Image (cartoon, rainbow, N blue to C red; front, side):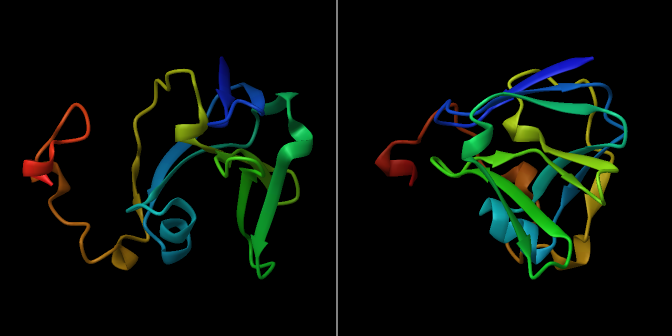
Length: 137
């Protein structure tokens, strides 16, 4: 399988060649801070290959206190990017960084006990196809 991905500003483009073994939604405090959202959505592979097509020099990596919480991002727009962890044994790909469809669904929520206090029953929250008008805000 081949997946294409990029950052928001378009300076960085990449391909992933291979298959993902797992897909998890992580609710730990660090992932919530990384994304500014309820959870991170990451795909994992021990065999897929990451190929930088453009902008590799703009990709930066942050390793929180060298404890293994690693985030790669575009130094221009801040978009999350793939990175290689565990001494080269694990490719971690933020699902939202992919431009290609992913055929796999998330397999579970991890660090659920750490979820944000407002992360409850989100499927029941009103849905809009675009930014709602001021009466709905």
